[in-house]
Image 1 (tube, one colour):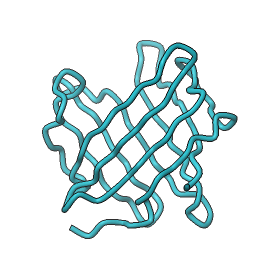
Image 2 (cartoon, rainbow, N blue to C red):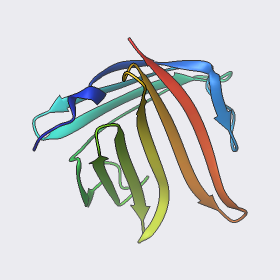
Image 3 (cartoon, rainbow, N blue to C red):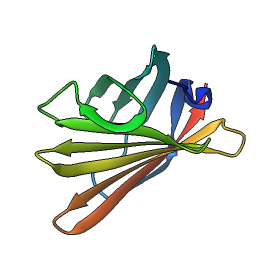
Length: 134
């Protein structure tokens, strides 16, 4: 599998860039993307006013659904590249799409906009943040 190496590296959240339609935006955060054979390893950490959080998972970025590592959160995850500047993912549980995540490189590739879209009873909500390459 050919990876898009432009996404590899460590990224730091710009808290002032956060535009959240649901929930409270984090006060700080870090996003790491690294190759692990054919897989991508995602390591996320963030904190809000209450406490720190961390999440780590791997995914095959081939655009096909695969079982997700934590079935309590999702049954499957689909991850794929779209062009040179976009890395997308979808999470599904019980055949329902729980959310769409778009990681988009901006300009020279030293900024990454992360957009999370979720369907709710009231319609689609979007949370956006910008991360700077470290």
